[in-house]
Amino acid sequence: MKPTLLILAAGMGSRYGGLKQVDGVGPSGEAIIEYSIYDAIRAGFGKVVFVIREDIEEPFREKFGRKFEEKIETAYAYQEIDSPIDGLPERLPAREKPWGTGHAVLVAHGLVEEPFAVINADDYYGISGFETMARFLAEDCSPGHYSMVGYQLNNTLSEAGFVNRGVCEVDAGGYLTDVVERHKIRLQDGGIFYEENGALHALSPGAIVSMNFWGFHPNIFDALRRQFLRFVETSRDNPRAEFYIPFAVNELVQSGAVRLSVLPNDEKWYGVTYREDRDMVEEAFRQLISKGKYPQQLWGA
View (cartoon, one colour):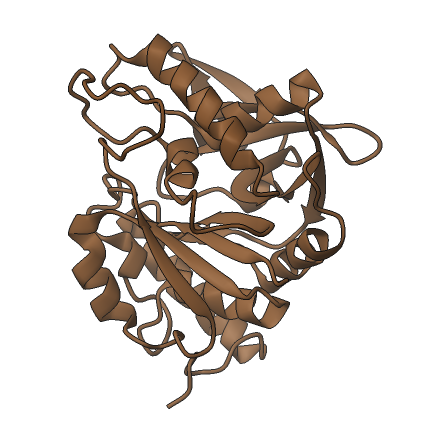
């Protein structure tokens, strides 16, 4: 059975200022998400599931139409603030935003029955990451063995502003031992720093970070649901609290419930966190095309 690719595309794009998931950066108007799907098809994925908001469904479908629907099976899940989850109380305090990436994965429960990868819609991961992940999902994934593609921190920064990253600790066997979400990471004074409680702390340029490229067995859904219900109970009065994938994964790793292989990758990340990133990303894809990594028109004439 071919693995599935789950794409998280429900983000509001608040820092970017618009529906960045469908913004064209390729020479024929291709969005970053299209390059991920193209790479996934080449790597052997058999299905793609998009997690979106219902209010962006029309522009989302209008942008992509049937570009790749004949090339790979597609499905949609919807992440809303009030998306139903078994066991979730019917009445909750008002929220300002959805519950986060862990919740986004959880709403796809029922659409995914095979080993699957998770990525962000607005991040470029590179073909080698998809190839490595596809092999893991086909050959090594099990109820007790997950994975993630690890990137070097200095290959994942934006010159236009700060980013958030899950900074990882990896043992000698290549297994994740800890992942901590660091916020407001930026280049400054020749170094790389993150901000916490108003203070700056240095990070190593070669630190391994998560770019939300995870490989899971479908049993993750049961674990996520249990964790999410606990999270809601403890965070219900915080309208901005978010249930992140790294939080959930870290709990499973720390408890010994799963091993998680960190699949190394030295490709450079590209993304449109900010509008100022767009020119750089467009130039990056021009260079990738000139090197023969992608065709001029991704889906043909």
